[in-house]
Length: 332
Image (cartoon, rainbow, N blue to C red; front, side):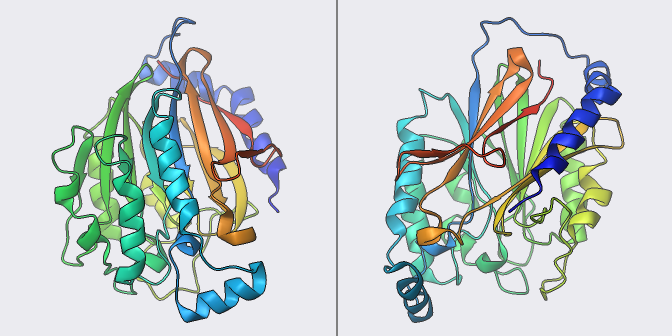
C-alpha cells in the first residue's frame, strides 16, 4: 500500500537534525508535568459509501460486497465519538472530505443525521471533498450545515464566506493542556483567494497550534498529489504547501483523505518547524470502509501524538505500521 519507510525516515531525520529543538526554542515551549492528561482528536476519512443509495452504487456494491446499505457505519462512528468523549478526552472530530458521494439531498440527510449525534456534545469540523461539490465549488453542504449551526458554539472560529454557496472553508479552536489549538478546514483544491484568507487566519492566531484538513493532499507513496484529473479550479498539494502550509511556524499537522490507503511524511516548514502530513482513506475497503477512523491521542507531557486506526462497528484495531504509529511533536 504505502511506503511507510518515507515517513519514518523523514521523522527521524528531522529529530536528528535538531528541527524539534528549533521548534522548541522558537515557540518558547517548556516541558509539562507527567500528570498532564492526554487529549484526543478523531479523524473521519471519506464516508461517501455510507451515504450513497444511487442505482449505480447499489449495483456496484452488491456485486462487490454482497450488500449496499452502509449508513450504520456512519452512525456508529459518531455515536462512538459521543460515548467516548470523556473517556478519551475528545476535543474535536474532523472529517477529511467526501462526506457524501453525489451531492444530493438524500445523502446529505444521512450525514446530517450522523452529525446531529454530536451537536452540543462534541465539537466537529467538516471538510468538502470533490464528491461534496460541483466543479464550481458549489455544494448542498451549506443547506444542511449552515454557519448558523455552529456560530453560537464557543469553539467556532469563522468562515471564509464567498459567493459559491459552499461555506466549506472555516476554522474551529479549542484549548487543552498543550495550549491553544486551531483546526482549519479547506475545500478540495482550495482556490488561491481561500489560501490567502487561511494565511491571514494562521498569522492572526500566532499562539494557536494549527492543524489543517483538506480533502486531497498526499498520495499513497507520500508524494504531494497533483490532482490533474479534476476540472475544479484551484491549487495542487504542492502549491498549498508553497503558498501556505510551509509558511507559518504554528502549523504542525495536515490531514487528508481522497486517495485510498495510508501514508505520511514530515517536512520542515520555512520557520524550521516540523509539519506532519498524514493520509487515511478506507472507502475502497470491504463494505466501503466498515467504519474505520483515526484516533489521534496527544500526550503533551511526552511530546508525542499516538495514532490508531479503529472501527467502532467491528470493535477492531488495525496495528500495521502504516495504521498505528506515533508522531513526535513538542507541546507546552
